[in-house]
Image (cartoon, rainbow over the protein chains, first blue to last red):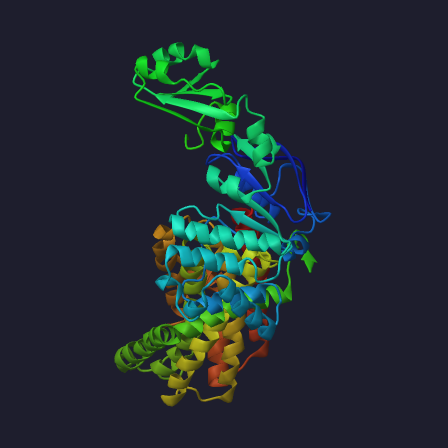
Length: 300
Length: 260
């Protein structure tokens, strides 16, 4: 569906995307997970032709994005990072005005807009001006707008950044039901939970490169252990030394991590060595990122 | 339609134009009323106030002399304001352009729509001012209606020139320069309030090369019904010339700014 080969893009001295390959299958939710500045948004903008690659190729349904941007954009729905709605227009008008850019007739646009408002639970806000919407409602409206042309591929650039947990849940639900309708969805996120809950496959990114691609469980299984022991202490070095019986640990800030399998349960020696807090938990995508980059996702 | 490095679509341009129209209709009065009163105040203060001290200009009353240029004025200020303040707001504040170019509409279509809309707004405002001018009995010829197409093509030219400037503006801090250093002198020295023949020789040469002059001169001829078609043809050719230089430049600069 979406195929990229050796994609590169630099802005001045900054290499934003550094020789990336990916191949997104029809109907899957594919996520780019990485910290801010990893190059995720640049990839999204390349797909909708707002950024032109310096080199490499990018095809959607076999159509080259650089050569035929109009044709490609006709098949895409785009939900950018920023809610760039028309503030002076009402909720409904935002959708019908947007439909015109796709050459959708007035009547068809109105029908589709009302369906989408229903789907996003915005019907009651139909005639409200954008200024008067909450953040979560604006986000849902941008999502509805991205669906106005019945796209084959939906691009969600940080779909839930800045939303409260409830609004986020709501967006996730909608995204899942879109997947059931067979839409191919590409999203970027720096939330581990979002990637784990929504995505069929994930590419973990850092500094413009894809470090690893796979299903969330594949990525987690590739870790040296299924569980993680995490200890926080004022002197993490001492805890690291005390924890050699757990295997080779890693220090990040005030925390020490060990990848373990089920049978290692005794955490008392760590407490004795002065750990303030010790926990054992299942390994997750956060650990995948940590293992691949040596940094935590939240780090800049 | 592909023209050199550019990709235009009539449907895309029209969709952008209609978007602006829809937003305009939301606040039509707050836009029409100021743009209506400003020229009317000029007409009263200059035409009748100052005009009382002036016997006549080129064989007509001073109010009659400035009336056509006051209609043409909205053909300068409306697209000038729209393609600077309006365009910049859509570009950097509301990010409307980014929203639009994620659809099949190209940035070329967006800029064309901006210019077309600025000019159309000028025409709408010229109609309202024209009605006042006619009501004062300052529109002796029916040819005066032909000022509207001049405002349209002139507005397209002014919009194109303005967007070239806008494309360099990171924010609103440079807006005042354009009004004070570009629009105001164009407005004051282009045969508007006094005949360019009053300017020194070098000033007359400069006036002949300024874009707005080519809107005022034919407007006056048409309003009075004293028409030299050769001169009007030359003025239209000059407007076309400005357009052909500035419009592609405006599109190219905006494309370079938005598509990285």
